[in-house]
Length: 96
Image (cartoon, rainbow, N blue to C red):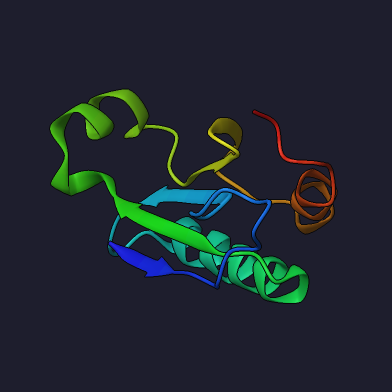
């Protein structure tokens, strides 16, 4: 698992808004990671990445859709990450 965090603002819950599910050796995951990292860096957001091969439940549920991105705990995209769509989701207030 790769975890990148920034210091949370006082009125914002701690933890990254974006989660990326992928696996080693996946070229789509590499592409998605680059987009997520760039957009998150641009907006000052954190993201975490989980390897689905280390969790049987995640692998069973998402193994055919990786990479899968989540924003604020909700599935956002799979297979490809559109930077404009991710940017728009991250500039919208956090959903509770």
